[in-house]
Length: 340
Image (cartoon, rainbow, N blue to C red; front, side, top):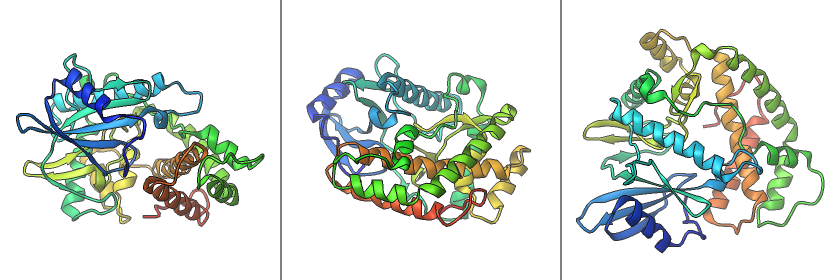
């Protein structure tokens, strides 16, 4: 996120870091990196560096009625899985550092989940920019290792239910009935944009439902997945490639990871099949590609139905909403391609 949350005072965050992790804080500086979570760099009084991630639990809800407690429980389960992966041989997993009580994160107030990570020195990447074929292959090898994780690492991991987060708000927006609340500068713009693209979105929702049934008919194919192994969630370090941002980890079909990595020539899918003996299925690639588009639309719809002020994050979110809606309007369901 480009801007820190308005309703998390810095002294509250500092107190949580001291109390739960025993950090003596010399400096705490906001880092405008990534999307979805807020990040800070911490330097402790002994010169050590740490990376702090804060998630607004309201954005992690699946519906407006979804309790914040449930959103926190899902985040806790995901980060706990990352911790177990790291402890069971997957050293490339940048996992949260346990609190004094052994927890992967803590809750600050009702709305925020706080996690602390080791500061990783290395090269970062933009989310759609693979540095080289070796980059893509190195990450694929690590994804394969995650898919083959031992039961001890996979136990208690969240299971993908294929639900579209904020589906309830998306449906209201698609209906286009009633006045749109003036929640901010993008409220009415986003509402009109969604209504204008309602038909292709509904078509994609219908196709999604068909593909979910196909996925649920094959529980034998479910593996532990990262969920977003794009270049922006990778780092090149002196010790090799690392995978970061594990809040999306789920037990799911392997294509949940593979569709993001495949360059379009079949090379990633072929390499995966050769390494694992599992042939990726086109309909499952379509399922997860379509889910990504729908989740983007629903997330940004929810954002602009809530109070907002027109920050840089809002500007970027509206651009994403427009881009994805325009993309899904160009192709019929069953022929989805990535717009990036």
